[in-house]
Image (cartoon, rainbow, N blue to C red):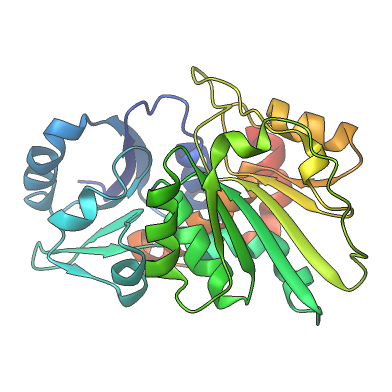
Length: 284
């Protein structure tokens, strides 16, 4: 029998998580495997009931659209996952109970950690999307003292999310369509400021409509970040580079969040000194 973990979602065939975890297993010479499994929302409880009875199953990563629903099916939640209300990593304990974690928050911050370690006079993030991943991102940004502009199809939902996850700040909730049209807003001097523009929605993902964003809304020297991983180089990122902005792709966050999950599943730290080779493998 071989210990294994997997990633679940709907759709799931496009996931790059199996390549990441199986690369790390091979590099470390560890026995185990990491698969992907299509799970419909209505089958989520049945899937977990079957897996918790399998001692070789060490857990799973969770992608869209299950991060919120699966949190309610856990036996216990890690404090960060409980605060965010979304789970992207499920761990089967020795007694068959299930613990839910959220590694999206630290995984999201990892690619911009060097900038976050600097001192800024002001930090602002424009976050597009209000799903499970956006919840983790908003919570992470609030911890890093960002003023957050959260845009969603339903501004009331965005407002409620900010009040829950980033209370007490001067944050703003608006409609997603606000960013679709050009603006002539004159940004102030952004010296010693750090601005992020983040697509935390599935828009632009394979099979989804494109994200409508006019880059006149992005302050000078913004870092543009897209968490979508299929395609990896989204039109949003291409347009950002064309407008002269630095970009971060979804693979950076995916590898960062997988780091903690791998340790939970297989009891070893992944070989992060091999990130360049891993990225090369994925991009073939």
